[in-house]
Image (tube, rainbow, N blue to C red):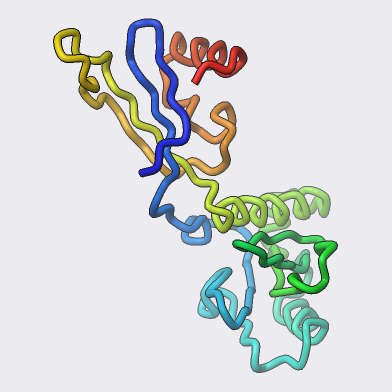
Length: 201
């Protein structure tokens, strides 16, 4: 793994932050929304078997949206756009550059999920749609990280200490919100906050 940052605690233990080289796609998790994506160069979104929407059965995106709304009455749906330039990024709103971007599909939440998980609140449903797209976007941009916690270096040779803990699959670079912070002991959490604030790495 490629080391991005390193933090040394007062007792000498070292927390290393790495880019996760083989992150698991968040679309393999238990998502509430269905993501329908079609692109000639990328395999994106959920398998057709999960949502039953086949690209060849529709003439354009408007036709596909109508087909989704007919197949899943009462669903809340948003378009998905992709921008490709030295990598890819996705959003539920169009990108300003029309040359390297365009629509690649939809994300939608079925009516029964809107009822059971959003209390029939459309705003909550839209927030959930955007949240799943944002999480997938982080994955597609390669912003998934892991950590390794080492004991203090050897007092005799100065070599790296014994590995105490490690974990990967943390989405986003903010250590306070991506889940890394939650893996630390309370005292270590406070120290890490102090080190980040003082820009010690």
